[in-house]
Amino acid sequence: MPSAEEFDEFYVATRRRLVLQTFALTGDLAAAQSAVRDAFVAARHHWGKVARLEDPEDWVRPRAWSIAQRRHASRVWHKEKTVQPEVARVLEALHDLPDVERRVLILNHLSSLSLAQIGREIGQTEERTAEYLQRGTASLSTALDCSGSGIRLMLEALEPMSSAVSLPRAPMIRRSGAARRRWHLITGSVMAVLLTIAAGAFVAYDDGGSSLPQVSAPPAHPVTKAMLLTADQITPIWPKQTWLDTGTSDNTEGTGINSVCQATRFADPKGTGTFVRKFTASGTPDRSLVQTVEISSSIAAAKAAYKTTLGWFAGCTQARLQLLNAYMLSGLGDQAQLLRLRIPDKTLRTYVVGIVRTGSLTTSTVIETSGGHPGKLTPIINALSESVLNLCPSTPAGTCRLSARIVPVLPPPSGETRGMLAVADLPAIGKINKPWVGTDPISASANVAATTCDKANYITSGAPKPLERTFLIPQANLPQRFGLVETYGGFSNTAAANAFSGAIVKRMATCAKRDLSSTVTHTVVVKKGFHGSSYALWRLTNEINSKAKVEFWMGIAQVGMYVAQVNFTPVPGNDIDEETFQALLSRARDRLFELPAS
Image (cartoon, rainbow, N blue to C red):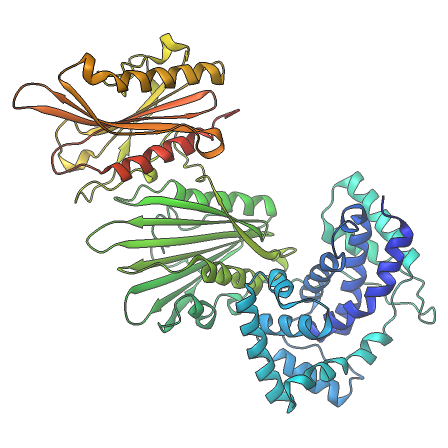
């Protein structure tokens, strides 16, 4: 168990350095002083976890910076009464830098972090971080009339002021951290309230025993238009095109629908504010970007808004639109996901949607590309990180997390039948520009998804309550036999599900010998897939007579005790290929993971 002595050594060794960094970041010495103090109180509270980190300072520093920025009265530098002219010049030059360049410069010159480590802290690649450092160095060198190598000396000119502030002795921090922990256990109050309560406990200091005035609650910092993305911040995604900011609104005028799949004007109809900013790109291909920020009255309300926004895209029912991939952005904000969607048409349209919740803010970025590549994910994620970084100084943003790591994940819940395919999972068919429509699930006592070859019966095989769902395109005026049906059932255990799936595979392999009117082609059997899942697919042709035949795509997918069977019946001119059906079957498998104990 990490000891109190270890905490004391850590606190004494790092506190002055963190005050200097935080003062350089904000230009507000009082905010830096109280923020560093409160960040160490939080560190003591969580010392059992923090002490085991490779460098505990990496835990304390972002919190001190975030607290200081939120306590700073405005985005204009705080004016210290006794500041020397040289120090004022340095602070003014730092203030003129974009926030991310200022952070990179401070970490580069006033910490021991490598460029790669700095990139991880700000949620950027090493290459992108190097660009920020280069731009920031050039700007600051010009403003201060010094060489790049002289910047460190300029920043160290801030040290006398930061070293002069009074800081609590280590035992005071430890006692406040213990009190904070007790208060958490008793009341479950949020960190911001606890830090404010704990602030009044500091009365004895090691710099002459002076006392600091009582710390009142920090002023609220609202979200402003200045905190939204800028054209410069999204340009690195497509550097060969020029981006134009076409306007910002509160989304109270017009329809309020700003992007594909958006179902209602607000994800949080009881929110306290909304900003929408739109961008368009010059040249080709056609591109647009829409950023939306919704401000909720509480974290719980923001969680609901995040879920609603995610559901708009995961459960989208727009004609021909298909959800392709989903990614979790671990370490960015409190919740973050990235989705890729497309509408295949004469001109392919693609969408990359990033949704992040930090504190009680939900921000989404929808990028639409028509007739071109949608862009690489890394610069898109960098832009998402910058959108969160821009919002961090606001009070509703909470404790910002900016270290994004992309992880492929299963598709989000669609809002339709759990465990089954959704409209957004289905492929575009031929040139049809009408939407798929799914029926409500019903009991699959007859298993309409079965073919004459497999004749699979869930109930007699041990799955007592199978469900089936049918999908049609009713406005397309297609023959009645066209459509897609899915059946799934839960067996008592995985062995029973294996037996059911294995029997279907064997019957399909021998179908042509047993039924001369049937032909089976395009057989694909994957026995060991994602997380132990499996699937198999076939193309089946049944000859009704010498002049007529009916074709099917049929497949099964298994996840643990659950088995889904998917049957697609095309008509001439409106069919799909093997690759498309295999992707559809893989998505049916993915949906089975939504079921309990899958």
